[in-house]
Image 1 (cartoon, rainbow, N blue to C red):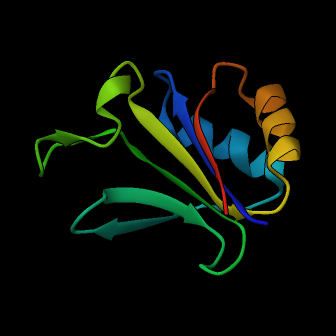
Image 2: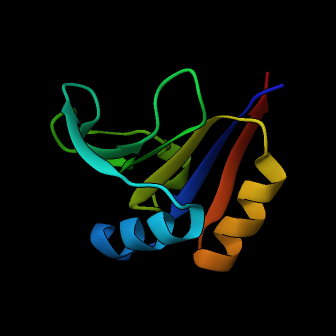
Length: 106
């Protein structure tokens, strides 16, 4: 079973968050740009566990991704993971202000 996790992140610089996430998970984020997400950061390939860090508010679309959670300027998605509980523990140690918004198990 694979899990899809969404976390809300309080205000902090994106660069600091990327460094903390890289260190906590032993991953490397790279910058990307898409018509939908705008500028975002990604680590890992589709089809395997991968991480996405993106703004919650998309200025070019004038819309919130997580409208009910506008207090979080950044969102972290952990997709296709087989270790959701371990991800939670590691993330809470590295970034204690991260708030889990959703978990979907497929």
